[in-house]
Length: 119
Image (tube, rainbow, N blue to C red; front, side):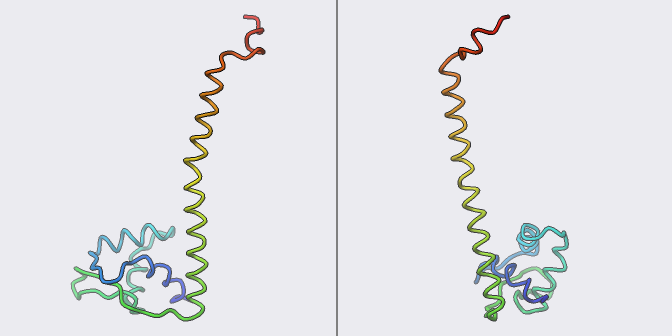
């Protein structure tokens, strides 16, 4: 189970790129909510998904082939990311539609109910 949850984290790292420890921490902090990026970093190295210099000055993604269960998990994770990204992409369209509606309301002037209000 433990190795299984590391695969989506591993997928966030680019192949053939060298990362500083701070860059690895940034990737891991963005990917988890329980706040222990240090344990995640250590486990990625222990499970040979990432490698590092002995002084921790550089990290890199190791080539690895996930098993069937891990591939299924990663496919589900990618689909969830696509759905989230799609929802985020719709948000600006909704904001634009709301702004256009508000602008039309303002341009039409006071409503008949508002103009007959005593006051």
